[in-house]
Image (cartoon, rainbow, N blue to C red; front, side, top):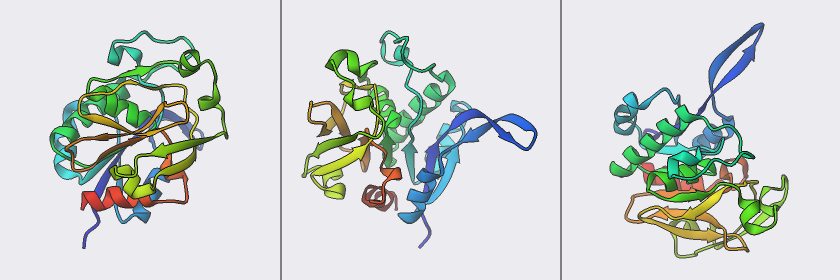
Amino acid sequence: MSRPLIGITAYLEAARWGDWVREAVVSPPSYAKAIERAGGAPVVLPPLGPHGIGDYVGGLSGVVLAGGVDLAAGTYGGEQDERAAEPQAHRDRFELALARAAIAADLPILAIARGMHVLNVAQGGTLIPWLPEVLGHARHGEPGAAHNIQVSASSRLGKAVGDHVEAVAPHHQSVRRLGSGLLAVAWADDQIVEGVELQGHRFGVGVQWHPERATDNRLFHAFVEAAR
């Protein structure tokens, strides 16, 4: 049986090799390795523009919306926080268009960290641009600090990973208002949304943490199986 072809969103960043510094398409290898371990064939999608999105959606079996820099607040009608990193408009445009096309085509989607935010905004949702200001603490953004996450056992996410996840996933943005068709299925102990699912979709799951960095690959197995 052939492996399902899984697209992974990526960065455009300056990269060095030898004496050269050039703009390059960059993707952490952990995404590709997790897909390969789960039985998929990973391909990296450069954020060059919306022109090829129809071909991607038509040729791929699934899409991973990967982590990265915060979405620009203007994409959801918010005000940019000066403490947030400089947004990458080209990536925002490409990934929002890709997410909407994948949703329309019922293409399996696994949205990770920033990717969960892309999925939410693509469906008309909004984000909290600077979480510590809303909560009065910075625990979600502490490097190396474990999140204790409760997962709805009846959800697709819960069936893949169980009713509890402990993950190290620093973030200072979060879902504020859920987008159309999205349901919260995982929460931190302060009720910040840590996982969402797209109702009525073949596989549309978003998580705030980084499952590609963990030894537990069950979520990727569920995703790749849905993409077959």
